[in-house]
Image (cartoon, one colour):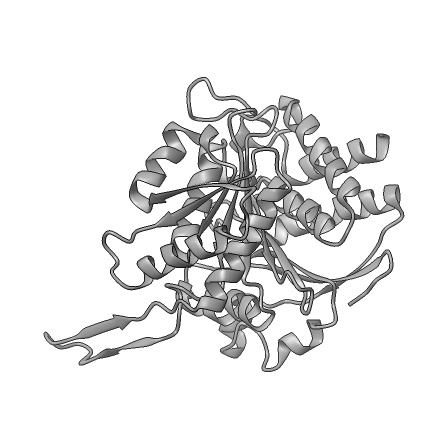
Length: 358
């Protein structure tokens, strides 16, 4: 992997609004790069549902080999209505996560200054936590199948795969993250009262791992009541760790509580650095607004900030977040989904301009 201030970034705009917001993320990265003397080489590829419709594959055979020596992957969005979701995701997003051992999906849940939560009387001091999602096994496995298709005896079987190694490592990541936070608290998402094998195992491993972190406080909730607590008591949480399915659900609910899933970022992390990590907004390809130039680029830009932090430039990352908050505070610079009048490019330009002016 590169160890200088020049980074090779594999860039995949993908589908829909991904093609509109990725350029704004790149614009902001170049602005912050000039400010902090960081160089980027963006190697862009057209892997998308259009590629699938032309070739029968979301990406070419052996495609990921060309990116193994890159420092990070910058992804826009995956999916389009005329390609089944399981085809697009299992043809692009999930192979990247698994081949690059990106076993941590990290999603900040934070109410930014200038953003209004749908929850009454909640401010930025009330909503500031992380969801750590196990990203390569659990409920999203390829184990299972279907029998007797099209008959009254049709059977669909989906196996959930939980390994001690996979469970422990994502939990340890959550505890290590909590150690860097003021509250030093980890919440475990479970459902061991209803899922009889995997969730009791998850609980056992959480108990075993937390024994190595006596300085970190813990709590544990079943997923159903935990979702209620996200809405009623978001201030309870600091770091939340969950399986692939539970983490996926919680990391969408969290940004909604924080004002908008449209501005939420995420990181798919290989903590050891053996492979590049991937950074993408939580939102999808949004076919209903694609091509109109009105998509909110902040999710992509915030993902760029997470990438900067991962690459060892926390000060540069913070400057992006500060600029985002300054722009959000000005209604003229917000996109339509946040009550503003700016288009995608104008919002991205405003953030890049704030960075340059400081």
